[in-house]
Length: 546
Ligand code: TEU
Image 1 (cartoon, rainbow, N blue to C red):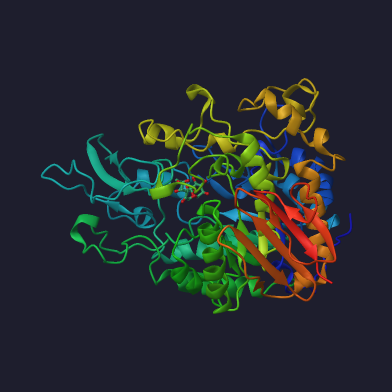
Image 2: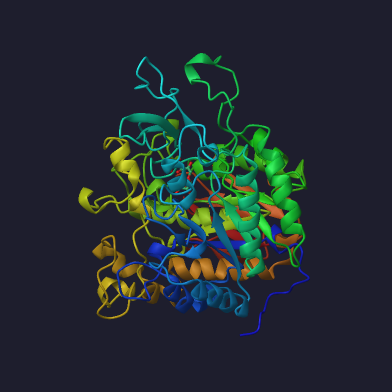
């Protein structure tokens, strides 16, 4: 299939709408109950029809799947669960043939404990060249039985695991900011840097259009690996957002820029907006996820403030903003906005099983979609968001696979609830996630998702799916939505209203009473019916201005 990608287009990424595919849960082609590349390939026309410009595929690499593939054992091969390297090439060609660019995940902070490098490190002695590629240290205490410092894993528990020496006696400890199956690589080591430059080229040579960089701010650690308790409260983090990390991305940017047709980076950066702009300088990453926006509650004042700060931060370095409502790590937006506390993980704790009004959450998620898709910059859609799927919160403990559940001692049920396999055909087993006769999807789908299946919504003008399709079509067609920046329309504290270009406005009613729409020539699209020139609560409208 010939490519529909314009190789001369150097700016596609500045306004792109990118669809995140979590491959395990997108579509199952092999009938084993787990998503794979043939399944994704078969659904590319659906993504083309949705109207996105690119897809981001979460890790597809060979992996023991201790953390859903974010524990990579071979960065240059596809896990058999998903298919083969040939399937990946076929997928890239198929996507390009439909005019879809492909961004893949890269996981540089850590590899799998089954990666050959880590296996070699386990077999080697303390102080060896093999162990220097990781962070091995002797333990504290007279017998070395205490971890080298007080760092914790993001999933809970200590960030260190002790390994036996050759004679089986307890030996050194190694660092893992996530699970013990994900040893942190030592990015001060030249071989680590060279290996990832080679991995980038391996995939760029095969035609990928970019990389989503996993935990992009964690690669560099203070070589002393100091305990947090030993540091002043206002001291910089010993392992996050350290200034030396930027040299890595300046090198990576030079590599990407050496290829035809802009090949881009999007950084997963849970950092302050002040830090974010350092990663977005013209010689570093093209874009980064805007988690401040994702975390914000469904409140006009808070969202307006985040939008203003985002635009100011990104304009200061000439980078486009990146708007996002969800991903494979966070509670789905329909559920978040259906709760009394609508922000994500307030004080850093993911909330489970809080009372939720799914009808309210769906109404707000529809309005939120029209809000973020009207903002200047690029946007990411997490798979199933376009179907109005909600967080599945009643998955039996024994079926959950997120290591967070065990590592947090059950304090955090984990992220499986936003990773439930998608519903494609309402009347098929597994809602058509796999072919007839396939094994059941790897996580149970709620029966109520029947009404949210893609084929149940396609063609229904009132559906979430058709709202997204029409919004993306309009977003592409409206010249005013390709003009940078926005101008706020004076409004009350419960309303967000702004214009783009010369003849477009977006209005969102966060209040509890209908509000009059500003003067307009026509209503291009609204997230819920409007009448008599009024915008109902929790509703957004796109207006053509006269
Ligand atoms: O996520 C990093 C990250 O910050 C989140 O995992 C967060 O710490 C977690 O959800 C607790 O709120 C990236 C990937 O997106 C995630 O899926 C991986 O588990 C993680 O890195 C390790 O690779």
